[in-house]
Image (tube, rainbow, N blue to C red; front, side):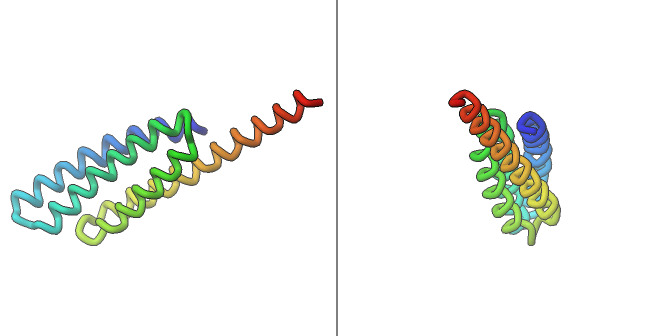
Length: 118
């Protein structure tokens, strides 16, 4: 599951980055400061998607925390940029997947240690 979270996080990060760059640019050209600001927050959320996806391979708990932070930021920008609600939900889903991947990995390590001690 760690590999799936990593790949999905990185791909969604690229999509969010591209979309948010377009929104930020469009907001600046139209002199809409609220939309330009929301687009800038979206760029940061896209970077958090990317970083969270990268951490998912080795440190899934850190990845889950990064995805939750990204979700909170996306919800803050959702009033001006409606698609950020979708990215916030995707962030929360990836955070849950990364948390369960961390928990299952930890349980497997504990089982292996107990078997070696016997």
